[in-house]
Image 1 (spheres, rainbow, N blue to C red):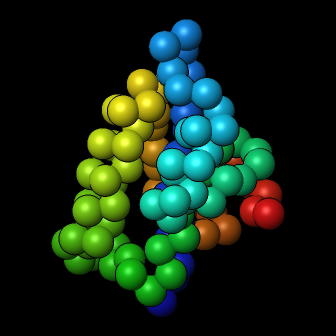
Image 2 (cartoon, rainbow, N blue to C red; image 1 turned 120 degrees about the horizontal axis):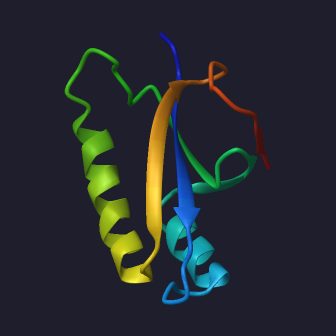
Length: 92
């Protein structure tokens, strides 16, 4: 079974929380900082089913949405099969 990863991009503005707070809040809920075309990543491992309802995925996205609203940042995300991303990423 393929492994899927969701990548998160953050856009800050003058009203956003400071970068350290953003990183702290996102890593606390399970996002990993990455370098490259995205800012954070969530590796779904075996919890992603491309043909299923993926309740765990939607719970995580809703939790992330609430955290990011409080941080006053704009964001977008994309999910790819790991290794088939449209850009480059370095996990540390």
